[in-house]
Image (cartoon, rainbow, N blue to C red; front, side, top):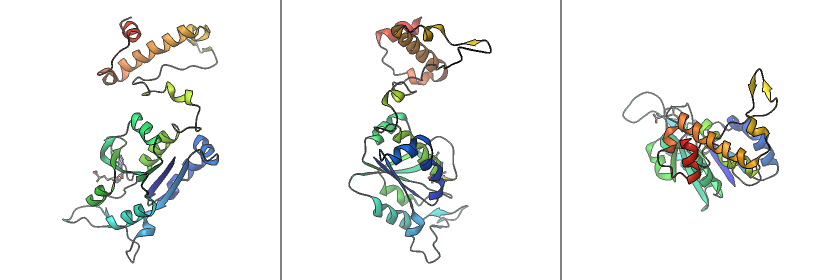
Length: 234
Ligand code: SAM
């Protein structure tokens, strides 16, 4: 699986590619990651990629031409192109799974006041990473790349994300490690019992409880299993 990021600031991604799990997966060639600086595609004699907004107003607007040409240079028939914008569909774990199944994902980062509206016609999807406005799309592209890559085969052990929050529509259960007693706070006894069925049941119950308390909207359309109904009512 390959991700290409179109950006004006490729250096933004230096630590992303050279750190921890992603760096290891890149070295093992389990995944591919590249950045393309769309300033290199401008036909403006001063290397400008932006211009003042038609109709007036504050800030600068990214021009279509450099982004369109940069996109043409990397897009293939297997590419899925996503534009980062606060006006897009909110990014969710399920989308990370869908994207992880693609051969090639292209993420376009805007900057400055935004981009020429005609850029929207070049993409397959518009995605937001939350209801707030960042200076550029780079942090969003990094968040999406990270979420997608960790679901690709060989990047982390599959069992490590099976119980993650949002994987089965619930938040993850509480996790503990040694020491068993930290300043009077104890690890729940069931987790030390070695009784796998009881541990699984406790984790499911805690997942339901946490989700109900923190993110009740996630349970709104859930079709509860028999076991979940019983645990939820306890
Ligand atoms: N004026 C634009 C608007 O109100 O919709 C916001 C432009 S923002 C300052 C510059 C760029 O950062 C955007 O084009 C987009 O690529 C990126 N960006 C900012 N916030 C984002 C978010 N929440 N999700 C995804 N991308 C975002």
